[in-house]
Image 1 (tube, rainbow, N blue to C red):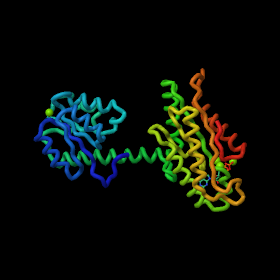
Image 2 (image 1 turned 90 degrees about the vertical axis):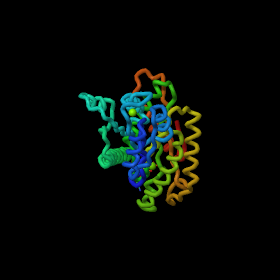
Image 3 (image 1 turned 90 degrees about the horizontal axis):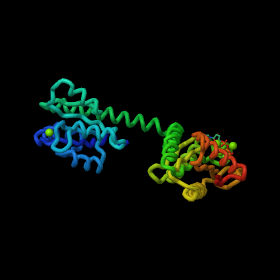
Image 4 (image 1 turned 180 degrees about the vertical axis):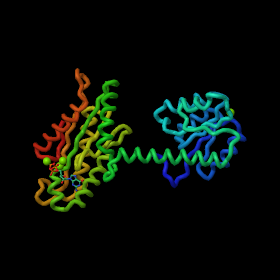
Length: 303
Ligand code: GH3
Ligand code: MG
Ligand code: MG
Ligand code: MG
Ligand code: MG
């Protein structure tokens, strides 16, 4: 999610006709920060610099045809979500279809009517903003702001596929707070929620690399997905995690084993030689390892 409703949207106009650019700039300056490019090559550089919230695209450009530019944007996972609106005076039969075939959100006919342009652009920005918000809500655990279980399950399948294809290690981690019933019984549920949030913050900090994922797996259980991470990498991340939680020094209930709140950790690394791979086997292994950590006295890490 990039856009906040109160922020001005970032709108990129790609058109080689400066009169059109000036007219659009005037029509849209209240809605967004306008950037413009007069050819496709320049536009792609600007898009990479900062992904715009919406693109207005001319059909005829000096270097690459507008329809092709739109196809390229829609075939790139980084830019496929950006709404593209064509600016065109093409009125021949079938052109409208072509525009939507390449994934455009809409098209605006010339001559341009400033208020119509502004209204259409605003509608698409609002729609796009609402979709992004819904996507974010659907992926997030609202109490901790970590990813939720559903997102973990989806990403697990994706990352297992990638790991097998690229022959790269993948580490799956399960984390459970130690003797948390005692914590709740002694301090109450509100303090308990607070404790969960603080530990979630540590997990979030541990998922440092772009593809690392930290999720709330259940009540006081968390999961980490660490792509391209082998035993040494996993040990380093998890030692730091366990240590950092302990160093929060959250006072535990008087009848708990340790003075401060701790976590138990279990992890498993994908076996790339598996003949009949089962996607959930790795989670089961991490869960068995977590059980071992609990059995052996808690506040520890087991593979
Ligand atoms: P163990 O060391 O074996 O894990 O002991 P435990 O008491 O932590 O046992 P377990 O993991 O089975 O218990 C989970 C407890 O966490 C039960 C429940 O009361 C508490 N819990 C789960 N979700 C929440 C939550 O969202 N908020 C609060 N405050 N407590 C929760
Ligand atoms: Mg042109
Ligand atoms: Mg538990
Ligand atoms: Mg527990
Ligand atoms: Mg238990």
